[in-house]
Image (cartoon, rainbow, N blue to C red):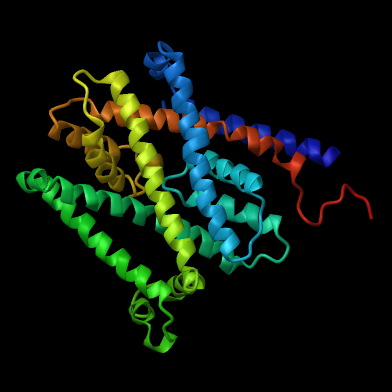
Length: 329
């Protein structure tokens, strides 16, 4: 019992440090929510969409990937772990910090969990997430082809997205087709690159899914659903902030293309890069304030992620490590 109290106290200190960091760096500013507090029903809706909708879909996608490799963690427990990972990702550039935490929790949850399998679930989860986003982005680029051709900067972005789609499609094809390691083109390429040992281990971990085609297809579809939900969230924010209003159909072009620019982990949550991209993309449709929309979403996301402090504190009350038995023989 004493050890539990000590751990609870330590976690409280960690949460205090995280909140202090977010507030002192002006990343969690309650005054920036002022426009939302004028419409509390809208605020509740947006929080629920992110906390329950967005996070639940992301969790379910990862849970399917875990189960595919016989890593049987209950869905609710996976949801807690995902939210805890989101808490840390608010203060670490990119998403790797959150993934490391998620992987550690899964490793502690399962006695016989192989590190290679856990790594595979995290890598493939990121892959199908980006691939689903790329599919939606390229679809909307084709749909808005005349707009793309009329803007030089958008053409450049479109070319990058098309190249990314082609590379990821080829990679996905190689994953699901059984290929002898001797003839595997990706392994051949990896062996020519720096850090080939680590990259080869990651690639071989991903290849664990080569006979899980249905799971991969389902997770890609879930990724597309997540992006559609994100578009709806941005539409709600746009309705609150911007005059004139931008149509939801325009957002089907703006959000997937803009979101791809935030993948580069220059700052937590794509801050900085995303602001520039969203401002430019909204301007294409004659609307100013795209950076404000993106900033409002980031603030909401950070707010929801910091609520991950709740599952972080209470997680040990529901689940213990396999070797924990409260000191009993």
